[in-house]
Image 1: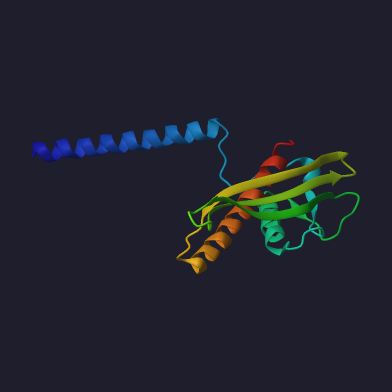
Image 2 (image 1 turned 30 degrees about the vertical axis):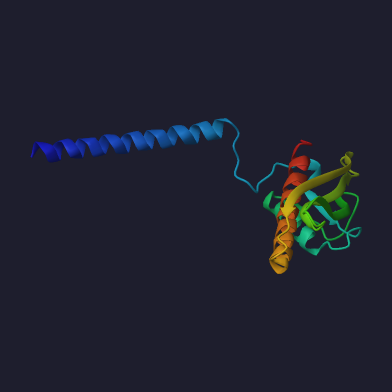
Length: 178
C-alpha cells in the first residue's frame, strides 16, 4: 500500500515540475521577442501594397508566394498602383550555375547555384522609400554523372528552396525598415 502511495506522489510531483518548466519556457520565449515564422512586422507605410512584377520573366511562383507572405503579415494587397499605396517592385531575377570542380577527365562534378532578386519599395504619400537592394543565395550542388535525371530534379528542388529563402530574406529586409 505504501509503495502505491509513494508512486502516486512521485507522479504528481513530476507533473508539477513539467508544467512549471513549460510555463517558464513559454515566458522566456515571449520575453525575448520570439515570434512564429510567417508573421512579419512591416512598416506602416506598407499597410496597403501593390506588388509590381512586370520586370520579371518568370514571376508567377515568386509573386504568388510573396503576396501570400505579405497577406500573412496583415498587409492589404492592391491590384492597381496609386498614390496612397506602397509599391514593392521586383526588378531582376537571376539564376546562374557555375562549375566549381571537375573530375579527372574534365567533366563537371560540382556546381554553385545562385538565385538573386533585386527589389525596391516606394510609398509617395508616406514619403517612405527603400532603395534598390539585391538578395542573393548561393548553394553548392554535387553532380552525379550516373544519375542525370535525378540531378535535374535536385537542381530544380534547390532553386525552389532558394526562391522560398529569398522571399523570407526580402520580408526580413522589409521588417528591418521599421
